[in-house]
Length: 219
Image (tube, rainbow, N blue to C red; front, side):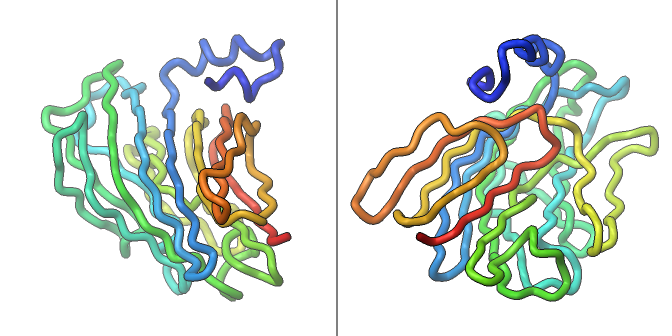
């Protein structure tokens, strides 16, 4: 499905991205309560030279001092329930891998999550939250941390800069929201339907990209 988001001359990039993380996101936006709920599947391949006994996910909405938050519900690996552990003031989630993921192996991680979207939050730029009638949703999904020469890199950037440190990935996203909202998002829209008179379903693909961002404005 990702070809729809690429110009023909860049179609070969998908071959180079064969082992990159892939995110399937099914999102529901409650604009009245400013809550975003989601079902996420992460297809993750170990591209390192060592086995991985865990995967860390970043939860950027839990940045210290902000009024936003993320709660993760059920978590599964290949359909098998696992018990994760919050870390670093709940800005990271450790998902154990048993057995460890060997180099070149892939695992499918499934999880449910809910995000509280802030309103006029002074601790962040306006890339996340409701400000002056514009609803901005950046880095709002649990995102795989980067494994680099030091291991899992879980450092938090300052709140005045770009928080996201992530590997380039591919995205397939469906968002349900109230009808009458205009949406701009990373990537290419592939469908727009109206399941009811009051709601709209918008689907799109994106990537290679290291983050996903959405902007909503009510008509």
